[in-house]
Image (tube, rainbow, N blue to C red; front, side, top):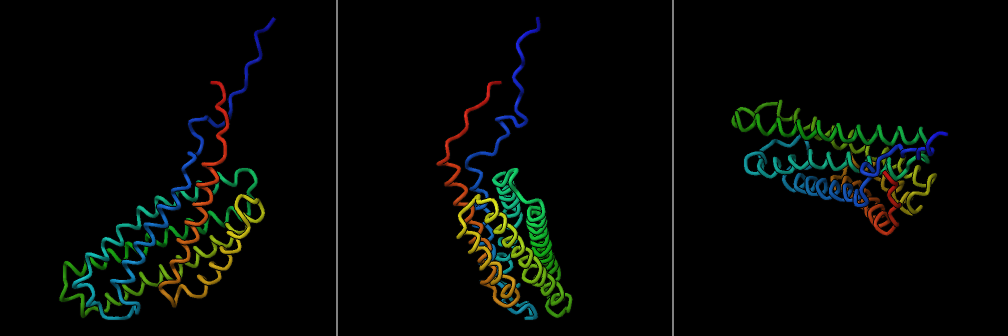
Length: 228
């Protein structure tokens, strides 16, 4: 006679399950990105073709704002993981792929824009008198502006649209959050290249989604741990 039938081990170890407070990642991302955008808006002229006298007395503020971007990016990666975990097996593969891809493209272009801005400031500090009269200043400033306003936040709008569609289809969050996402995405698609403050709608929507996920995770009973 054989021994007792072994209990199958779960495919996902209990220690690897998503933490209940993982939704805080989106809140951290939203806070850091909002602070960075606000500092840049206050320190840098809205016109990307304006001569860079602002570099003389606001370079430290801009540098600090740009240094927040990598930390915001790390938090956004965790936020993407929280969303994928929330959707689970219910996700629509088409919309989930577009959502993940647009989120990663947004993140990559944010890094490119921040790196271009940081390179501009370092070059100015090395040769301040030369840079103020150099057309390379206008190019670098315009490049950073276009990558962030025209391209990165257009991808953020696509991310909001596809994520909102997944919310409606899977019901992992209230329908009104998805409807707000559609409205904010439409506004961002149109206004990101013209209005600096339009960029703030994305982190505000992310913090709204994150707060719902965090509260829902904390009030939902934790499943009992399986025997080892």
